[in-house]
Image 1 (cartoon, one colour):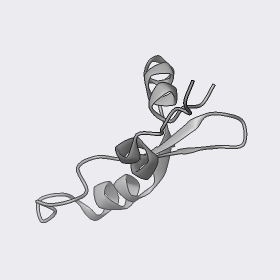
Image 2: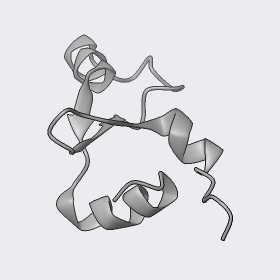
Image 3: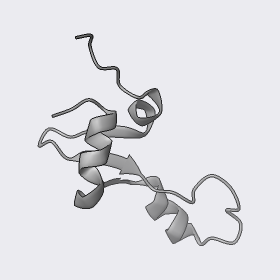
Image 4: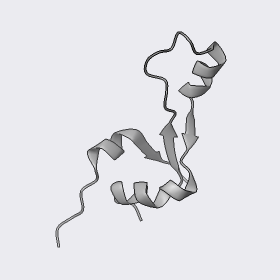
Length: 65
């Protein structure tokens, strides 16, 4: 059987932490920023951990067990 390929879109959007959790960026930071507060934009810049319910689906895309 051939090797499984990682989905390139998922590879660009997600990263694994040392403990096996998945890191992701926040949405709503790309455009229409004038109506958002400085605090809101600052908090959207930071990374967050992916929800547990989505973890299985993303790990399949990343070919991680």
